[in-house]
Length: 129
Image 1 (cartoon, rainbow, N blue to C red):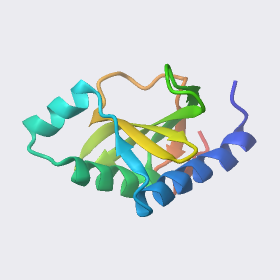
Image 2: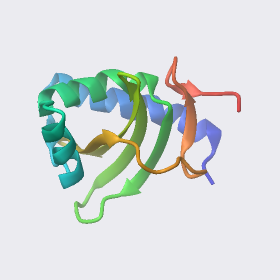
Image 3: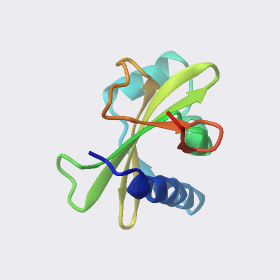
Image 4: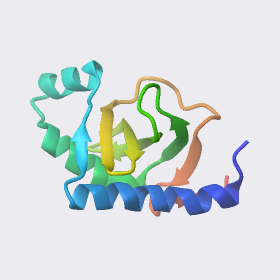
């Protein structure tokens, strides 16, 4: 089980790393088909989605990770649920040395279970729950 203290330190660091990679143009796209379909159906550009995802991370409602990537070595997977334009979005980033990949961005489809950490979406920090 996750220790609160570890995650209190990890989550802000991961968010800062993703923000840094975005600011220095070190985020690449590896969007899954479901995400590409969502973008096409809603006439939304990848650039807009990436901007929204990164700028809303500090207000994420839930966090899960790190998980090892299925095929990329030295890559950790981090997942967020962020609230954008009155919709909860599932956002998945692969963080690695040399940059970050965004893999998923689409409305959440599954219920959040106890494998997720609930955050205070106003601060990007733990709630008292």
